[in-house]
Image (cartoon, rainbow, N blue to C red; front, side, top):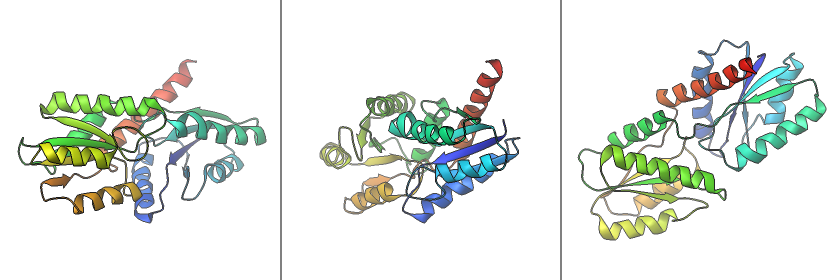
Length: 241
């Protein structure tokens, strides 16, 4: 493999982009591939095309594409393949190998529990896992599966809600839970600081004191381990083909 291109979502908030860049700089240290570069899907630069053109002009023919995405939704299934197809049309001698998203890796469950534990001092109250949401049913169902795993591990009531697409909606579910529970821990199933997290912070600020916002997943050492495993899985698959 000649190069790795790490693809982050991108944010209008510079802090979120910087968190991603710092995380990838740590990941790079554990990958023995000479050329490793960063790209963003949207809202930030460099774009996928800009980064791919850079590594191709530097001589890369086989490129490992690493989407830093929680689930396989529209960005993974449509946007990235379409972008790579355009680049392939311009540079037909180049081959792309795409690693899987973080998905339902067991260490993602460990990371959620770690974040909840940072705020939760007892076993009281309920937990609300909040995801971005999607028009694709796959990430909706998988976040619900994650919530079920959290319930089994913590033996506490666990609910799921979504910020953009998907039901139940975060605001409605939070209001509903406030009628039934005296303490609610909200766990943002988000990678970084961004506009969606800011929206959640505003909702919590306007709620009573018993609504507690946990940190998002952030770019934790557990997340690094999952990403490296996904990359090595793809490299191994290519060697055996």
